[in-house]
Amino acid sequence: MAEHEHGHGKRHVRVAVIGSGFGGLGAAVRLRREGITDFVVLERADSVGGTWRDNSYPGCACDVPSHLYSFSFAPNPDWPRTFSGQQHIRAYLEHVADTFRLRPHLRLNSEVKKMTWDTELLRWDIETTGGDWSADVVVSATGPLSDPKIPDIPGLDTFPGEVFHSARWDHDYDLAGKRVAMIGTGASAIQIVPAIQPEVGRLTLFQRTPAWVMPRIDRPISGVERSLHRALPLTTQLRRGLLWGIRELQVQAFTKHPNELGFVEQLAKRNMARAVKDPQLRAKLTPDYRIGCKRILLSSTYYPALAQDNVDVVASGLSEVRGSTVVAADGTETEVDAIIFGTGFRVTDMPISERVVGADGRTLAETWKTGMAALRGAAAAGFPNWMTIIGPNTGLGNSSMILMIESQLNYMADYLRQLEVLGGRVALDARPSAVNAWNRKVQERMERTVWNTGGCTSWYLDASGRNTTIWPGTTTEFRRATRRVDLAEYEVVRAAVAKDAVKKATSVETGGDGDGAGSAGPQVEVGA
Image 1: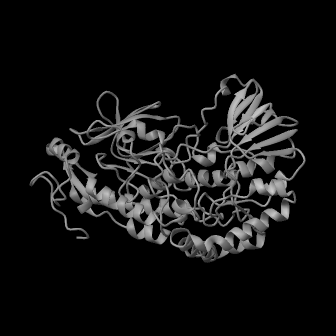
Image 2: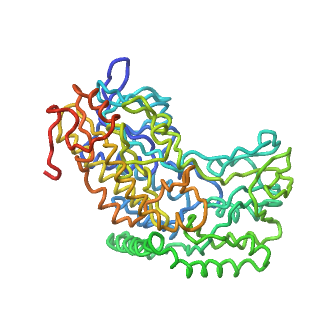
Image 3: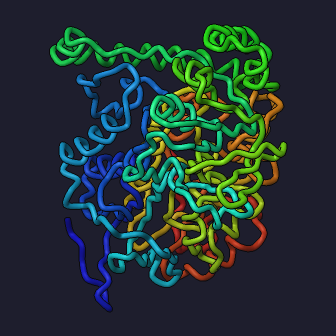
């Protein structure tokens, strides 16, 4: 890897990738396949794996089938179960890092503190805990599920017992016989509850909103199946294709015809009725919103665990802590030894955005104050040569995020090709008009989806109630939309006229199709 010193001991690379989860490792593989070896992957932890490294709580597993939750370019014929556990997914990502020789590019224990765009030199200056870098292009793959969110609960700091978030599980703390409060009923909580229920003394679940839970059809993948997948790789592809196709067909119900989901609600209610015989508990656990509005959860063990004698369900959120007593919003008081938060992540206000400083000196967080928006889920206006993987409105409600990541990697690859074609010191900056047009189209499509009309408040919505996380279409549509970079959607910024271009980017967008730099930047025919 050609990393070069650049004054003041700063090392310079063509591309800096931030994060080494699925997005970051995928970007690294794609860069190598495009013939780009001058790059680093900056990772704040001491190993790869992203959210699959951080989330090691009991019962942690994926709710997307294994053969769909893996890279198309790195199929794994040896998945042990139809839905894989955390340790197998983490091992898969370590395997990807080895197989594609990514280790020399990794810089572990290098948390990005600040990224600043240099308008003179057209490059990003990056400060990390492991030293300083500069890069022509930054690919931010920090992921939405990386920074845990713990609600601000009065009195929590005075709690004498153990407190931790599901994504920062304390494996040294023995839960055996303890009185435990589980806060939240999302995807993590419904895996943790059945895993810890048999060993704790008493488990109190604080449920602000009940979830719709469908049975999880999980089973070991037989040795015969695995041998077949190894001998005939086409069978792995067929299996993946089938899993993908079923989910593509389901999208219509989520995005255009939410009323058709009534049938699925009946299945979910039947699933509950089988395990929960107590009508009062059933009433507590029955949602009052359309299925799909929040993420549909998969578990065949959650309801049976809640029906056990040592479990209490409080149909209310946690509102206060008084010593070792936890108090719910409805006044219920419970004495506990430990509090576990399954309260999700900072998704609509990603912490990395506070550390990215763009062309006009503003942070990405300031630019996104009224809501996240990025052109084709990747590029933000005023942040040249910076792109994000799993950016705004690229999340999915029913399929594999790896499909979306690979589409964004296609876009990243073409972005870098366009910079090569343009030649010289050059940057691409998304036009505000293009970002707005894209975002308007996405939000218009969002209006009739179950996520916006289903009658719930979910982590998909930001503080102002806008859905800035979910993609309102099929993965096929997204792949088409990100196949290549349309230069008409970008300002072409060149070193000599960088300042003028920056001024123009921050002034009112006129909708012209030049690059804001007179004859300094070439006019390139799209697709030429």
